[in-house]
Length: 349
Length: 273
Image (tube, rainbow over all chains, first blue to last red; front, side, top):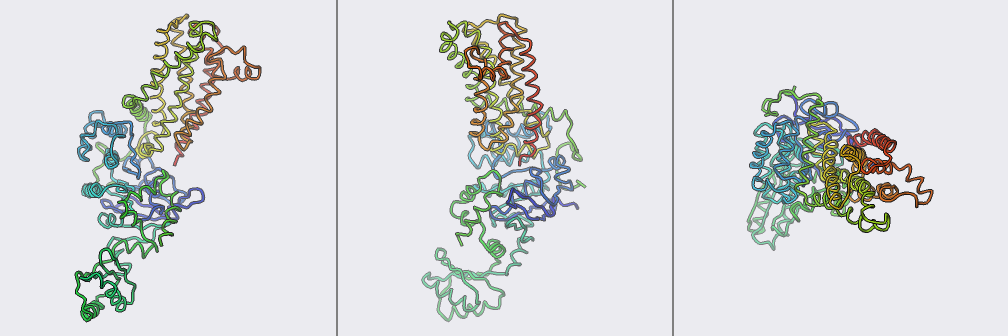
């Protein structure tokens, strides 16, 4: 079977900045491919090349077997694109935005209108369909943008950070929508800074940083690859967190992460062999436990291990993505704020 | 090789076409013209700009300058209206650049560029839509001018030709405006650059005043300024007077501007990242 899209050795420079330094990607048809990385990693640049908006300086890319440069017109007939910035015409009503796209794709007037109404209903915008898009809330605009990219029933859908800046409710609605499309056979390229999102939705993931793919695999493969498992222990009495951490570190020889807010100590463990020893020591010290759990490494921890820095995680917690969105408001996508994002990373460490 | 089993595909389409026909491109353009015109309805400022501004210019110039320049307001109205027609349409061409610029910064152009439509359609659609705006603007000014007492002294046919030549020139200027809109980073940039280029062209001309009292160096510029030719031609076709060379010269200028700036704008647009 042909890959839904693939890229080989993609290189793109903007002036002196190298946005992509040889990126290989490929996605099986009918799956969600997650492109994961911090701000400025090159995600948007890769998507824009695949969506025929940018020409690569090196390497090649194709969608459904068609080259994105030589056969751009064909590729455009197969894809849908929703960028980081809702690209709807603010002066037009939601309905007319969608009718316009339908007409541009060659649908007769009646069909374009019917398709627009259908999509408005699907995205719960029917009531707002007659209002200019500039009166829409951020979440509504995103939904309209998503609807606009679906008018032509694309085979391959590029979603560039579709949930950045959305509230948790809209975010899970978007996830459900993506799952629905994949069930219909659409291939989705999803870029995200949210590890949780990639973990939940993607069949395959490529982790990208500084314009290079630094790891690929299924979410499970990635988690196993970087060290296996994590033990989480919460004492009944939070005052004894320090004691617990001490015991865990002395048994495993690794550094423990103590979270005072949740009252939990987290530590990586290499195998189950150490568990009985830990339990014995905790018991001997007379520390009653509220929680004792062994789990796989989260993608978050994987990312930290792979890149040496955390993903844009604090932004996510602090302002529910709004801070992350604000940090990326340059239309040039993530090529420009790269330095800024990394500087912030640097100061955080 | 496109046979991805589960793909729903586009309705009624088997394999994607390699190229787009000229007819399809024209259809794209008309859809985008429709889009541009829809905005007039939803955007009140646009409507005000199109109708109120010509009326304001007409009233101000006629009653403020009229007596001083031509002795009485009616005589000045006869002289100035064709010039004001040129002025208001020329200033309106800045709208093309502004709209393109907001399309680019707002991401709408990214959407267009990811669609299988003619690459030139968004530009052509925007400009065609603007032509309709200019027609509205010309009609408003001419109509209101008539109420104030302006009279066409030639023939309806000649007056129509005057409007056509002004609109044709505006069509050419649109491409310059489009280029500015594509190159500027912000809407303010478009306005600043556009007005700076437009003001000397519009005011250093015989648009609103006869040139005899201007200093020689300025007269030299005024005489080569294509806007002067355009105003002379429009005036001649509406109230009588010399037309011939001025009309040809402004038509040539219009063609020249299109030949240079249309490919340039399309090129910049295509390479826009």
